[in-house]
Length: 337
Image 1 (cartoon, rainbow, N blue to C red):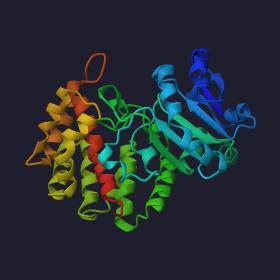
Image 2 (image 1 turned 60 degrees about the horizontal axis):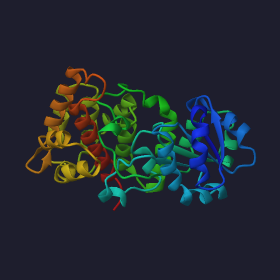
Image 3 (image 1 turned 180 degrees about the vertical axis):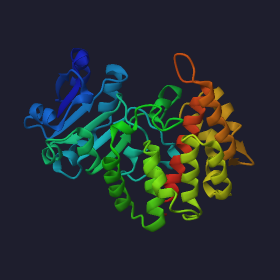
Image 4 (image 1 turned 90 degrees about the vertical axis):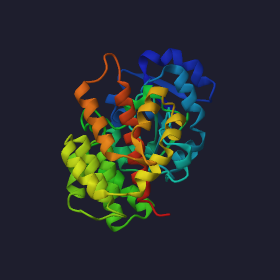
């Protein structure tokens, strides 16, 4: 397998990589700028190519390489087109079995610490394009090597407002829509459930306008009123707190509010949240249910505070972790079974 890494880390990485087998390591100036043609020119006869952005240093690379064994053969044989291996896992263990492999890559943002594996045959199918286009249109799976997020990784979760950080630029709306269509087909979603699911994933990846175009045409639909729930989240993040509150009052007693409220603090502990974040999150639960109005108020507080100097404030960490778990549960709510 060819492994492409930042050239500044090449020498330091060789000893770590050697412990995991025969990988050919090539350093490149900027991993994020690679095109399919670039990768193919370096791949030679290698059937699988790994691309790693250097996040977390060589120790993180070693942990990633420990987790790729099960994916190399399916990629080499053509059973899969690509796999993303996350350095940390943002899905609580209780939800793991409910997440289809095709959906897993889209449940947290991709970062420089994560490892992307691509089949050479997939690169050949679109050698003139970028890596994101090739990956989004193929048979993609995801996995994680460590089951913790912690406060330091909250930046890989959906932001307070769409576009607040460069997330949607990773995949264009067309690329993401192709990926969503593949996941919808894989999961057997139909009708209103498929539309609600598409609105949700588009919103998670910061394509708020396209998500809104779906949810605003589906008032009162879903199981129950799930389209209105996504509509409310969109306005909360827009931000339009008054409009968000109006939609959440229409949503009423959605089962996801109770599911998240009952499990929230346990999920946060599992994901490595600090005591302050857990305490703040506890104030978002009322009567055993997530209180969407209190979540709107926290979102408003975070936006007005302008963030912490030199990092993410405790309030923002809380918001992004809770919002992530809320959207994750709402997406899974649409899946059969």
